[in-house]
Length: 153
Image 1 (cartoon, rainbow, N blue to C red):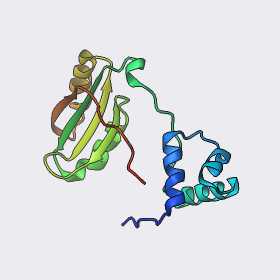
Image 2: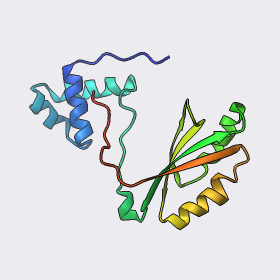
Image 3: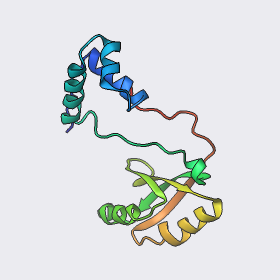
């Protein structure tokens, strides 16, 4: 069970600043929030240690890399015990960029990025549906992504 870590307003301000621009210097944040750069450093390290901050990443624009098709696929497995082996096989597919273990209509829900509909068809038939643990799939093609944000600290 995860236990929520308590943060104060300064921590929230620092998180918001880093979520807007992860390259913002500690000295700049210190001036903005009227504290010392050392205080910002200590707060960031505290949030890393408590795993509120789990990393820094570069976000790429998939369209500019030629990924024109984003879709979500609901996957039904033959049995719940197939989850771990199916997940290992899904993790080997470069086109799978996210996976969720879910309740409801599907056992696993994945997000795929492909260059074209033809590539999506190939991935579905020759890769995803070829996984022996997969009983059935349902594909939803994304037309756009109008909201994409982190949780509010």
